[in-house]
Length: 317
Image 1 (cartoon, rainbow, N blue to C red):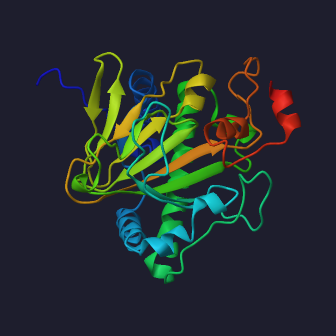
Image 2: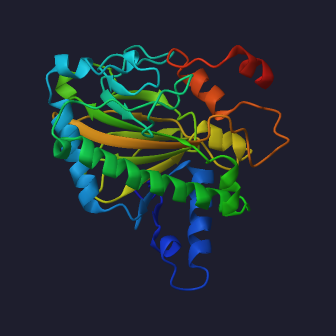
């Protein structure tokens, strides 16, 4: 169909390795337009080695194929920082008729000790050979942490701010990674989503999809329909969360999205969420009437897993 809408595919190569005057500015303008119009875009030339992506997908397969009793020993419900394993059926949003079918495993910055209320704490790791999980997962986490920071830099410049503004909210940023397995379609309940419709709450999301296994759909407000997002090797999907939309004064959009695995085989994906410092407020607008910190926003979305001191809530009210 001639009116079919496809999310923009942006080459980050000219930004990361500019060859001519204006190369970086062109990428910045493309990202600004995509985030304003869709809240989502695809990227190539991102700098994450293909081998690291393949090794990550293999590591996910290794972990999720473990017996359920081994995985639940690492439940994120037993961890103060929401790190560890989430079983299928544990996530449901207001308005959803059924819980998500996905299962997931969460990691973040590797911290030596727990720092209350839990945003920074040690990761939990399955008892598996280094090369089967921890090694490739940690390498991949570092690569996408770097990519997420690059996207932030581009977004800030798209709003007319210098890259140095990042110093105000990225001294010890919260960067979470969520590794996901969607069961085959025939293993789900009729009407059940892999992940139900939602917006991301925070900053930049860097998503890797298992190549050739579609399922992600983005809501397009203009057409009032769901846009399927292709799963292409070495192409990432990037999106803005609610926090970026609010910080930007609505210049950037946070779009609703969902996942439906329509094939009768499992589907793997991995999302790295790059937020910022726990105590950071809007660095783009000091006069923003909302004084919510990134920590407050996390608590509002995942309140059952985090708790902030009462005085901090009072200060932000």
